[in-house]
Amino acid sequence: MEMHIAEFSFPNLYLFRETHNYRVVETDHNIFISGLSYDKKRYLMPLNRPEKQKAGSFRQLKELLEENKMDFIFPIPEEWLECFPENNFTRTYNPDDSDYLFLTEKFKTYPGKSMHRKKKSAESVPPAARPAAHSPDTGSC
Image (cartoon, rainbow, N blue to C red):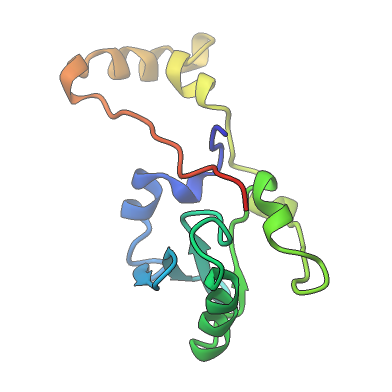
């Protein structure tokens, strides 16, 4: 799976680390990032599919949400929705949280005249200093 969700990217985590009060949360079965939304709601970002690791990971996720008084899990890639059954979770989608997402290709090529300055700036970075993209674990639930 290719990730097109900005929240999982290093630049996003780094730039918004204070704004969202990001913290790493480790359990026996998974690693999460906890954060605080703009409206002061607490959330968890799973970095792997919850059921992927061990049988107790789903139970541990629910306990983590309850014990730490988390309000929701965010974001959930569409490919992971099967890991969050509707009889245990309420799924919602807010288009306002998606209005700034762009395909990776746009930032690779910076097409069009209006992006010319950004493209030249990106090309000036030496190849050895360019970041490499890696997708999180995409195994089955």
